[in-house]
Structures are given as structure tokens and as C-alpha cells.
Image (cartoon, rainbow, N blue to C red; front, top):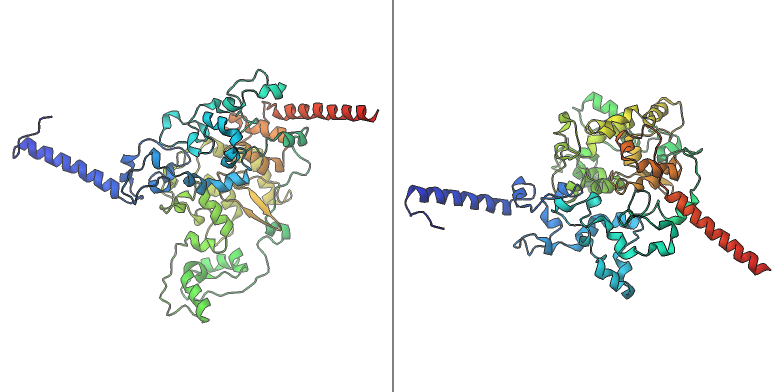
Length: 475
């Protein structure tokens, strides 16, 4: 290429353009991960699961003190496990990496390196990314299980890429699909006689926000808004002895505890209207931890600013685009409003067909009946019922705030949520119908997943063979 002659007008333009390009590139490289300038260096679009943190490159890439470029060769294997290991453990992962430590699986690893997440999941390759972030062809099961029909005659003639069909098999999570589990729940009614969701601890105790006050605390501020004080005085925070400074001046509260005094004066801590997640986590640890694992909180988990509604790839309300997602987005600071947290907060942002159809669904009607006292607690179904299921841990319950934990694969929702009220076959049929999901399950499912019947027939034949052998042995 012929360079412009120095001191000529063309040379000046050439220099300015190159300096501008170099400046932008340098700024993008050194810019903090919160800066969109970094986006120009992304090699390709990231998946639905990671796009929110795509500018925090070091979360996945091991660079040499920040001097190396992030590329496919320095993706950290443990980066995947840092975020997903808990869910894999909970799912009783059917293909854990440790399973393939046995040398007997060496030949299988030549076909597919099942010890590396990156064998099946890569980022920045949108042109070959399928659902679940899969970046290999859907026939991956067949390469290791192509002889399955020899031991399962019921599988004869099935398509080589049909293994992961809804209701059949998943690579990691088969909790609702194990053969024995399918057989045990064969023949269940569409709606169970004892259909009831897990009750919150307060509902189990029958006190529902009217618990005996542990510590009555009067705000030590003279200019408090009377309305806020009234709201707080009837809240669960008041009942639990949580006063204003514990949320708005948490550092002063720590100082009080350490110094044994009764006033925050002199500790130099500023009042903060914005209550941070860490403050909420002090009392709501499990809710906060699960919030950080979901799409609502994953940016905070890696040190990025809170997610804004405008960042979402799902359809959202335009008037909510500016909202930031934190605890107060769904939980008003001074009011216990279950209706808002479980339904209205969701519909205040989400604008997709599934969300919009909820209010006309039978689930919503049950929720209205529960709210009016016409049916028992635990019968109504809200947005949170399905997307933030309650978890029982011994004598206590809490709400899992990772709204993605029961979405992918969809069968995950069956065992944790649907089967609280519905039979297994009805539940699998429902989640297998994408049109039904769009309309928020406004009608019974019309398609049938055959895996429940197949598993039952297989166990029936097995039981008959065992009985036959027993009869033969007794002669």
C-alpha cells in the first residue's frame, strides 16, 4: 500500500483516522467491563444464558494478568462450574465429568470429550448454537448409544436425533424422566386430589404476617415520613424487630453492636435510601444467593451494575425499560405485598405472550380465589409459583429466586412445580406443547408423551418375568 506523502493534506487525514482507530481500540481494551466500548471486540453473539455478562470477559477467560486476549483457548473449565455446579449437583447430573474417569470409557471420550463443558457448549458462535446453548449437532446421543434398541426393543425405529425430545431424555437433568420414576407415577390423575403447593413457613404457622413481635423498635429519626412509618409498623420487618437503620445504615448498626451504645451518632455512616443486596442478604441469605444465580441477578454476581429491563432479549414493556433489577424491584421496601411480588411485579416488565395470557388462565383464577379466601392457601398459582418455586428444607421453606432453575430443560419444572398439583403424564404432555406454553397453559394438553407408558410397559414385562421365574423355582 502506498502511504500518503508526509505534510500533505492526505497524510494529515490518514494520520487522524489511524489515531482515532487506535484510540478507540485502546480505550475498548482497557475500558472497565461496565463499558459498552468493549462490545466491539466480542467475536460473536453470546447465548441467552450469558449475554448479560458478556462484557465481563475475565469471568470465563484466563488471561495473563490482563495482557493476553480472551480467546477460545483460554476459557476456564471451572468458570462453567462456578455458576452451574450447584444446579448440576441438584439435578443429579447423569453425565458428570467424573463418570468418565474410568478407563473403560476411553473409547467414548474419543467420540465426545464428555469431561469438558466446551465440547458441547461454546460461546460467540450464534450461527451454530441450538436451544440450551448446545453447539454440536442434536444427534450427539446416538454416537454413544446407537445400540440402545438391542436392550430396549421399544426404541427400535426411533430417529437418531430424537433422544432429547421433550419427555424422553436430557443429557444432565433426568429427575422427572428416570424409568423407575416414570413407572411409579404411571396412571396418575390429571389433577391430584391433594393438589397443594408447598406453604411458606408463615402460612404453615397460620400467622401470615401477624407474628408475635420479637422486638418493638421505634425509629430514631425525627423527620421520617409518617406514611412510611405506618407501612413499616404493619410489616414483617417490624414484626421481626428490623428497624430503619438496620437497612438504611447497616454499618452504623454493626458499630452499635460492637460498641454497646444506643445511638448511631458519631459513627460517621451516611443514611442510604437505596438498600443494597448485601444488606438484604444479611437476613435473606438463601433468597439472595439464588437471586444471584438467575438472570435477574447474575450481573451483580460478577461485579457488573444491576440489570436493566431494556437489556432483556424477551419482549418487555417499554415503560419499564429503565428499571433496574434488585430486591426492591419486586419487594416494596416497607410493605408486604404478596400479590405484587408474585404477579404484578412480573407483569410490570414482561410483555411476552406467555406472561400476558396469565391473567386469563385457570391458574390465575385459582390465585384470585385463594386471595379472596374461597379456597385454601397453597391452591392458587402465580407467576412466582412456577418460576420461583418454594423449596422445603426440613421445618423451613424458602422461595428459590433463581427464576431460571426450572426452565431449562422444561422437564425440571415438572418435578419441582407441576407435580404438586398434576399427574406426571399430564405434566409432561403440557410442557411438551410449545403452543400451550405460549398461552400460559389455558387448556389441557392435546399431545401425548409416550415415555411414561413405555416405561410402565417395560417394568410390567419385567415384573411378569420375575413372577414367572418365582413360580418356576417353587415347583
